[in-house]
Image (cartoon, rainbow, N blue to C red; front, side, top):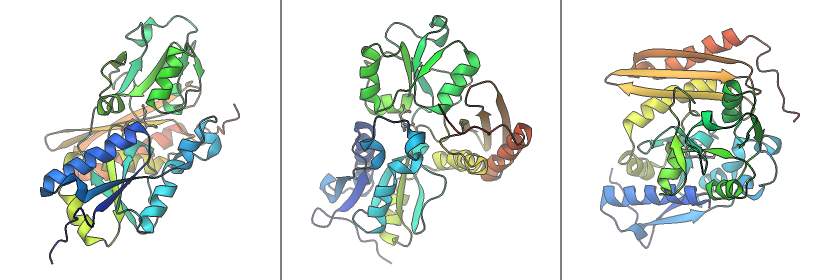
Length: 317
Ligand SMILES: NCc1[nH]cc(CCC(=O)O)c1CC(=O)O
């Protein structure tokens, strides 16, 4: 079977959200595909798709329906053939894809850590008693309150640029962003300090870009296999199995990170009560090929420790 390559006359359509970070990720995907097959950039066309999550900026995500809001329209266009691939931040992706779609291509992972972002400070312990911190992430909020119950957390939605503007306007004294986003947008001028993953365990899949395709589209499958990063895929297999077993939704603060050392995969995971009052953590080490099962096992261990009432929280505030 021969592979039909895209051409400027018949380009491959790359679907993405329109945020600056999403656009940077789509253009990175395009550059990698063009380089892998020695094709002109014009053999790939970036198609911007409006998604509900980007249009509603004034309400917390958990009130308007959570993660799927950033992907539904894009996945519909992919299934309808309006685009051929969709580029996503893996941390925003549900663990199960709609029928007919596969999400199994990953670009080399960026720095998975969170960054502490504040104009005058470089670490959390410099924040005064009772300081106001801005984040819309339930995970970051719970992790912060666990360490510093004195802090006041205010909702901070929007893309990287919006959040930096709120910080400049004095809405909060600091905020938290993924290092990956800052690096991909070349924002060296942002006052950001990476936080050790031992101090703040990142979200599952943070820093990883995933590319979704239609099942059965053999040409696209062959194209994507040329830019897939196997180590990133191995790490995400463990982290996403952990998330899936915990049934992670936007309402449950969950963190997880896998790292590789030779043939060994090391997985750390934690679940928190949203108010930060309790954290349950665990680790697994094993052969890389067991990553998925290690994710399941670790999640089951944490669920057993948490007991039936740990997750009894349904927003309200
Ligand atoms: N939820 C928004 C989102 N999705 C992915 C990233 C950052 C890039 C990444 O983790 O790949 C961000 C912004 C942030 O958390 O600062």
